[in-house]
Image (cartoon, rainbow, N blue to C red; front, side, top):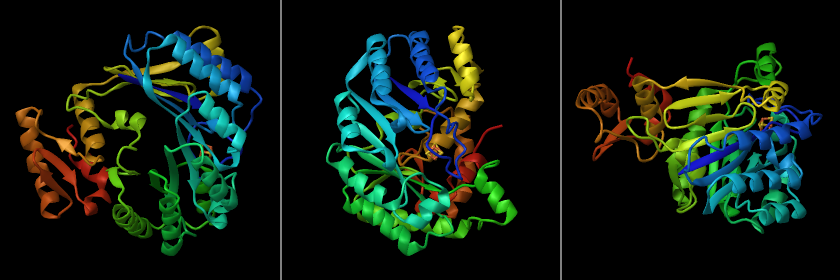
Length: 376
Ligand code: SF4
């Protein structure tokens, strides 16, 4: 069982907070798309005969691409890999790209899940983030998408300076009342070297307030729990049966680091073949040049047992299932039990059978707690 991720590194305009790999120039779009197809061929043996259960077009903004480009990629994967009949095929779309024609086309070529980058339903927040879409498009095109797709997830961002708790509530309620079965919600982080970071440093924009972010995360958990969503990963909430199968395969990981294999195609994409991690160069020109010469421009890292264990701690603690200590080496287990004692006393983690699970309060400090439990 495996998943394929395809990175589409183009966006209409640069959101001020974004540190993903993308360009706003479509000048080399055709060469890039040809290189993606070529890499798909070159990687055919990457995970042997494993069945591909999920395909994910991410970016960047895959919805920017003409349907032919997406269609050729889906066909290429189907021709070269064993794709499960019920494979989940997700496409990330921005509200300003969604039209009746595109929705029909995506459906026709086999896309069965949409991930829509809404971020907020308020105009001033979208302007603050420098999103390409407006609030009307977010509302109207979400309703339009609902007419074609049942399986929709939207991204929302909280903790931005203009987002009051009342507006945050309205954003979440709009998603709930629209019948959206999956939400990914992220606290705004100010990443190094982004336009946002520079604006904050210059004093042109207000910095984020961590207390406000924590408060909005607590409210979010409360509202979505009341509305029947399962909080299955720290940033992800779903109605039963609508978990992201693709992302879940990144998160379901065994104590020895066992996890599903995934292949990442395109500049900056990451792959994992069961023992090593690879990541492609995050530069479109270098990517195209190397692939044209028949070389995959990636760095490879073989994970040590310690790295695998720490990854397991970090990833599993972020999930609702938690960190399973059942299959773990005795010494490691007893150290984890000892180390987690202080967090249990503070009601930040709890035991559920043999699983160490974060409490609501603990979820606010998930990464810090996980890092503290790391082995060196
Ligand atoms: S649309 Fe997405 S990938 Fe593109 S700049 Fe905005 S946040 Fe980044």
